[in-house]
Length: 264
Image 1: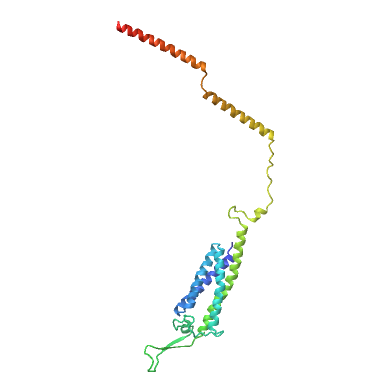
Image 2: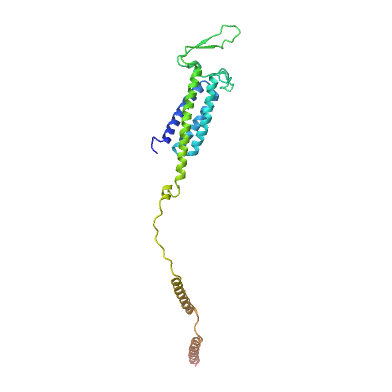
């Protein structure tokens, strides 16, 4: 694929989302906003997963990224409604900190142009370590800065969602059109079949003649082996016995002559 395709565009969008989530996570940590911290952490993990799936051609990872993107858009819409106090919500509640602390957004005291002053109470009933913070001169109020951050996240997520669906469709089409075992695509299957060599059938008479010749040769070999292994005829054994008896008689005669000479 070229660099101008949907895959490269999705990689670029995931990189922007990752940078935006990291920037937002830093400022949420400074403001002890535990609910946004948890959401940003999940966003970073899923964006990395989608980035990996896009680079490595893994459509399942991109599907997970797509599903999470829909949830992430819903969460940012809720944050916008929270800071704009829509639907009975109030930005002065401790909802973003899970009611653990009374911290607010970091931009409330450190926004652009804000002047932060610590005022010591003069009432005798208040502890000495307790102080008020006065913020004046802010160019943009903190709630609008939070809304801008959420709006940027929604914009990037919507564009990423569209390109993720497009890339998934491309990957699925490539998987359907490519045979991973043979390496052939649908175009090769659609080509007309090539001419094959005509095979002439063999006549059954020729086959029977060849088989008869082979069987006769095998039978001849078996008969030769059997002839070699068979014992000799009875006449042959009679001749051998006569010759052996003659030799025994000659040897016994010689032995008797030798004994008589020795005795005398």
